Structures are given as C-alpha cells and as structure tokens.
Amino acid sequence: MLNIEIISCLSDNYSYLIHDQDTNTVAIIDPSDFDQCDQIIKKKYNKLDYILNTHHHLDHVGGNQKLKEKYKSKILGSEIDKDRIPGIDINLREKQNFKIGKASFEVIFIPGHTKGHIAFYFKDEKIVFTGDTLFSLGCGKVFEGTYDQMFSSLKKLKNLPKDTKVYCGHEYTKKNLDFCLKYDFNNELLKKKSNWINSKIESNSPTVPTSIEEEEETNIFLRCKEPSIKKALNLNNASEQEIFSKLRDLKDSF
Image (cartoon, rainbow, N blue to C red):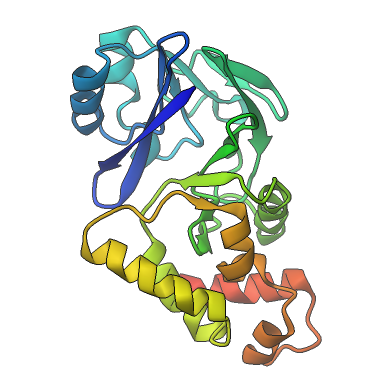
C-alpha cells in the first residue's frame, strides 16, 4: 500500500512524500525546499530512499542535494535533464518502469513546460504526479517546448483512466478557476466545483488531488473541442490546437 503526504513548500509548491508500507521504502517527489521537506521526512520516517524530479526547475529540485547528502538517496529524473537536475543518479526514459518498494510507476514523457518534463504514473494505485504540466483546472506555462507539445502532453494525461488521481506541482486552483469561469461560464459542473474550491482555499487546505475525470469535465484546457468555449472566444471554426493556443495566450496575461 502506498501512502502519500502533501508537503506545502515555498509560496505555492507541493512536494509529495510517498511511503510503500510493505517494504518501508520512502521517496519524495519534487522536493522544493530542504528544510520544509526534511522536517516531515525526519518526523515520519527518518529515511529517504529516492528523490523523483518531474523537471529541472529550481522550485522542484531545490532540496535535492542536501536531502541526498543527509539520507544517501538516489535521485531520478528525465535523461533529457541529466545535466540540469542536481545530483541525478538514474536517468529515466519514456515508458520506463521503476519500483518504489513494491509500487511500480511508468514514466510518461510530457514536454512543453520544459523539454524534459516527465510524469510518474502508478497504474495499480491509480495515481499520477504531473508536476507543472497538468494542474487542477489548468496547465503549465510553455517555457522551453511548444504549444503543440503541451497540447499533446495533456492529451496523453487525459487518456489515462478517469479515476486516476492527479497530484500536481502547485496550488494554482483558485486563479485557474477564475480563468475557466470567464470562458466556460455555462459549465454547471465547474460552477458546482467552485464552491468546494473556495471553501478549501478559505480553510488553507490543498485542492489536490483532483482526478482525470474531474479535469475532463472542468479544466478548460482539456475542453478545447467544446462549441461553447469556441463561441466564447469567437473562434467557432478553429481546431482544438488553435483553441488551446488561444487559451494559453490568454492565461499568460490573465
């Protein structure tokens, strides 16, 4: 059985501490900050076998080196980022499988936000860690890749089983909600979800995990074929990719 603990880091980052109970194997995903992560690791397990990085940005790898030094952990990341992830030991490739104790994950290559961005998909546990690609009600900015790459990466994630839980890299949900409501204003499921999100934000609680099904229903970046969204953008005859590009541009300045 896999236990997951959400660690809030920096201003809005999420790191994830995962523990395979059967083997007492411990890993952390995207340790943003050493002190904030180590405080939980030391209290809960006082060991750390693996560090998993979705991409190379500092707010996702900031704790790598000190955690590795303290716990003698192995660091895993995309082979494309092998020169940019501090302390990397194991280079991961698309569709490669790796085990955290008895829990196996598959590497999903999802470029766009960065050239080497990957997700960790635990099929049996129905969990995916998406870093800065798929957010609750949003998607990541495109820094190193292309809009087409990001669009394709989101489609990969959208094709996972609907009951897959999604753990993303930041607490951006409230701002994403406001953006979705502006252009998908007739979405009743989105309106209903907004009450739950607002209550979570008010209580300073995480809005993650979400699910693939929820994102399909409410995340505007996964709904680019919807006629109502095309109409809201005055792009009735545009392709899904064109709608996505327009939405990404609008979100960048939102």
